Image 1 (cartoon, rainbow, N blue to C red):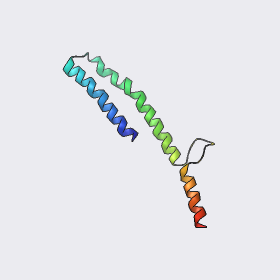
Image 2: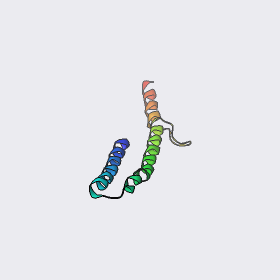
Image 3: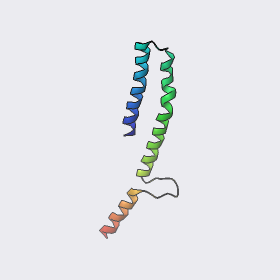
Image 4: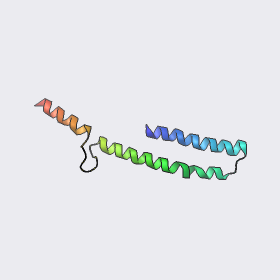
Length: 81
C-alpha cells in the first residue's frame, strides 16, 4: 500500500512541476528539485516496508516478541494435541 501511495505522490510532484515549467514559464531549475524532495520520503517508505516485512516474518528486533506468526503457529500446535 505504501508503494502505491508513494507512486501517486511522486506523480503529483513531478506533474505540477512540468505544468509550471511548460505552461507558466517557470525556470527549468524547478525540475531539478524533484529528486531532492522525493528521495527522503522514498527512503523512509522503503525502511518502513522492510521493518514490516521482517516483523511479519517473525524476525523482529532482538529481544522483541516474535510476532503474530509464531503465536498463531503455537495455538495450532496446542490445538492438535
